[in-house]
Image (tube, rainbow, N blue to C red):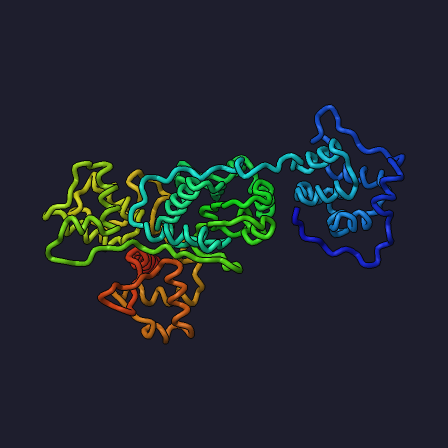
Length: 460
């Protein structure tokens, strides 16, 4: 068990050694016994004080033996800390030389049974990918190589919501499990009925929020020292409930982690895989339909279209509308999925005509309010540094621009561009415009909507 040691008092009076205390035998002060209500009926603070009194130790001496701070002991015995870390309880049990029944009793009173450490197999296994992975074969191979060939312990797959991060890591997990890897899965808490997110263990709506330290403790306890892979999906929100990935990797030396999020963790040794928009077809007067259907964004759009309209095929009368839809949606997988869903109501030509002024088409046809692409994009913009958001606002309406075009906006234009690319908010303009970049159409729409709302409020 790897546990960080806390500083102890340098001037503490020397206490009896473990061997001396073992030879003394039990002291006269009794230890509280469980009531008929079960072990949890005895408060942890009362149990700890009773065990310490029986052992003849002062708070400082117990802190020294358990490699904890004396303040931690005081907080535990006063009841200010009601749910101590499982590692701390184990250290206290070791220092007090408790037998198995008393050790278990102490763990139960602290809210973490001693036998709660389970193998990785008791972590949820990754669910099956939601259909075939289309157009991400290169990214999948890069991700697999980062984990297996290069052996990187932390790989972050980052990008805007709806870009396909979860689908990619689920596909990678499936490949690795087929090769014999033992893969655990942890998803951030969410409403599976709205977002399709698999909630983390113990994240029910009736339970209090899980602290990051508690969650990391639970995961570390489940993983142990095994050489395994843990996939953490959608762990973006700061504060309570977010896994401390750095601490998890420190405590599990054989562990490798793949995490999805809107932005990198910026941890030592982290490898970042930015997931960008899929390839879109170029403008052309005539198309080779066979080749056109092989372009990643078109292939994905057609795969979604055929779920509701199995007989749909690219033809002369619809190819240009499909191409322009894929280009207008920047090849963002979820946007293509929503557009294909709306094609049950509107043919591609009419959908394209409505796309410029009907932002509801960027939401799920099923009517789930949380699946609005513009709404989810706000989070990606908000986490960008303020000076880079200023750059994004200035270039959002431009068809394309270069690094030199933004050097008057920010002292570090290359760093600004790099950050916007990693966050997936801008992309290269295309091979026909080398060294030029453009904001995603979704970003452009977001700023147009924001300006419209701002103008209306000012006019009011």
